Length: 289
Image (tube, rainbow, N blue to C red; front, side):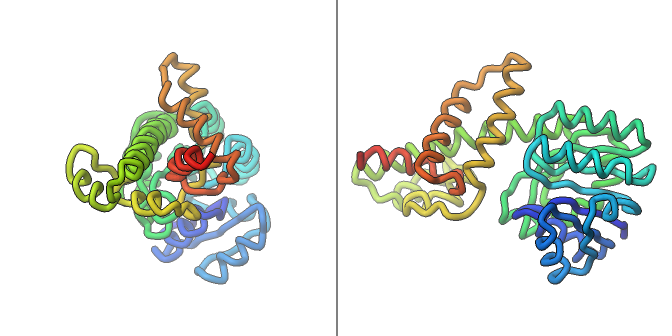
């Protein structure tokens, strides 16, 4: 068992840190809003810390799960100088590959390992310990952190050098955007054509159209229920990062750019905290206007 620190106790980080505790690790947690760390320590075995430095000082592995590049940069600048040589810093935030490479260089100069390790699976995956983790960094650093991360992972891949985890997560979000939009249009079409959505899904869900989104979201989409899951605000952040990277590497993402515009419409409808499956809401809202 290891001494570990977890920095950032949002909807993902809170249960992920809980899995570390339940696996028997010696866990120290920190959150910008201290009340969340106190709440976590009332539910799990571990220590709530008032400062980043106190949480990480003797940790073998430090995990971050934050909001965006600026948040990661601020917290990492506090954590790295306070970490012991030979420790590993793992960033589970979905952030830019450029930031990951910079943090990797900074960590290496201090004798600390670094992994960019964004996750997929949403809040339910974090709570159930069924996340997919995409890792970038040195192979030996990945090996050191892999056994600890297994307590909340169903799949874990070392994708390459620093930044490769973030780039892989970008691919993930690009693919999801297209799949959710296709499912939204298909369900919208079915309803306008007078078909029963359940019958349609039963007919097509075992063939080439099958997807995780179809299996898990068709019914709530058909019912107009979106108050759960991965928020539109966060998906737009992820797509922004992917589109910025595409401009840098010369790739063309017309569908992802279009779906990002559609999500902007959902935000304008007041759905920034709705699940990403709410793309169907803009189609049905247009029917009423």
